[in-house]
Length: 263
Ligand code: ATR
Image (cartoon, rainbow, N blue to C red; front, side):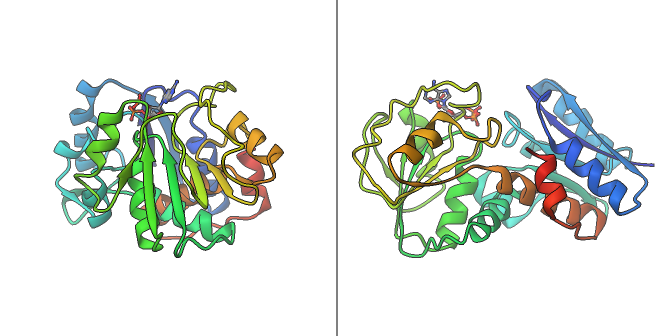
C-alpha cells in the first residue's frame, strides 16, 4: 500500500490527511495519507524513506519548508526561486522538492475571479508562505508588491529572492488594491494586527491565507468597512490538488463536497 505524509510542527490541525484520504478513496487508490510531527533533526531520515520508496510522497508545512532543501536531490524551478518546498516526490531515482503553494494561490485568485494585473498589493507577514505568494503575484503581473513584517529583517531578506519588493515598517499602511494576511495572526481568533481599516477602502480586496477560523477578525473588520474578503480555503485545496496530481498522475475533482470537507 502506498503511503503519503504531511510533516510539520505543530501538525495536529492539518486538514491535508482529510482531503487527500477523501480523494484517494474517491479514486479507488490503495494508499494512506498520514500526518507526522517531527523535529528538524528527523528531516534527513524521513526524506531517505522517500528514496527507499517506503514513503511515496511528503507534504511539508511550517516550519520545515526551507529546512528540507539540503536533503533533497533536486528542486523544481518554483521551489528553487522561492526556497520553499511543500511537496516531495521520487522520480527516476531522485528525490525532488516542489512548491505547489504558488499554483495554489494563483488558482485560488482565479477561482475568486480577481484580476491581479496592474494591481498594488500589500502583504502582511514574511513567514513560510510569503515567498510563494510573491512569486505568484509577480507571475500574475501585479504592478507593485509591498511587504510588512513585525520582524523587519525577515521582510528585507525577501528582497534577496525578489526584485522590486518594497518594505514598510510594521504598523504602517500604504495605498493598495489588495491586502494579504500572510501572518499567523488570526489562527486563534485573536486580533493582533492593529490594522487601520479606515485608511483604505471601501471596495478593496482583503485576502487571508488562514481558512480556519473561516473568517478571521481581519476579514470580519474588512467586511464591516465595505471591502471584499476571501479566506485561504481554496488556496489550501488547490495546493493539495496539485500535489495529489503529481503523486497519483490523476487530477481529483474539486466539487462542493470537497469544499465542504474543509469547512
Ligand atoms: P515562520 O516565522 O517560522 O516562518 P510562519 O507561521 O510561516 O512561521 O510565519 C509567521 C508569520 O506571522 C511571520 O511573518 C510572523 O512575524 P515575525 O517574522 O515577526 O515572527 C507573523 N506573526 C506571528 N505572530 C505575530 C504577531 N503577534 N504580530 C505580528 N506578526 C506576527
